[in-house]
Length: 460
Image: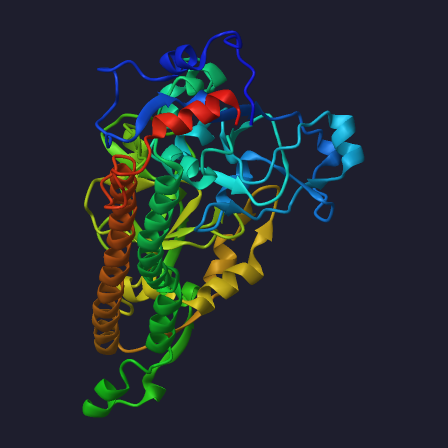
């Protein structure tokens, strides 16, 4: 690809002198038969185009039109397969959108999306919106080599200091770029993809453990409240399943109390637990609000074992239930209901688990009242929910078994999350080594990359 520069009248030696990074200013050491240049020397940067809303949302035309959100649909090889928005040549003419050649490197150039450092390749000619930028690699630079190298660069460090982060093309153009001989570029890519393939297999297995956690948890809770988990205990203790009773929340609670409606503060002496703090049946002690209101502290004070029900939230999250264990002094906000249960008839953990079962979630979904952006389940509706109640002794056994099983499942999930974090770190390390010539692929006898750079500069 011929490059338009202001150096057309210079000799190739003069062009080369300008293109090479000045000795002593290289970011790191590379093999002797590689060379450093500026990124702009190896291709062309192209900005995106305005994408009018009336042309969006058409999925079956011939030209993909990618937006920032499209980048998350890249596969393990970096190829982008998002067909939510497509246009034809007539629309492209109206929009005056530049057609980006296949296998260009696409990335965000405006907004917090830059921080995600996502990269992708378009597998067919496409257009991009004005929040994206493309880099079209020169024919003498392997596009996948450019893609993987770009993943070693944190573009967010090149954003300007305005309210909305943005990257200027001129800042990207001057980034030092390590040019390897073309055959070496291809070997590096093959080596990276071979190593990544093995890591991706491990990642998929770890992700399966994480993704199936909720299913495994639901199965444990279903078995618990159908009596299956304690069948052996009942046999050993001469207790029949008929000892269980179906009882409503109203029947096992003295009252269902709404929380404070007063506005909380960013600082204070007592925490105000809000709907976002109810997570996975426990209290999440991050993103906290506070109060110093003495009347509220007295009226809405929580005690260890108190069970909180989230009465107002999104349609998916309404009905979350968690137990307060007394870690910090706290009261609860108005979007929550405290279930003031009868301690001599039901155990707090048992009630908490019962309200996190698939049956409870299905009930909440059926009785919720949907409004604009939020759903609601009032005290009357949650009070009518019926749960199977065992004896106090069996409840205690059930709680112990559930706790033990969920602890193991959580440990498996956390171990899988650690594996995924390690894989991410390992991939970064592989990329860092790759572009230092440390993957064992370089052949020092190959012609120097300086000759390749000359071809790029002359447009050969």
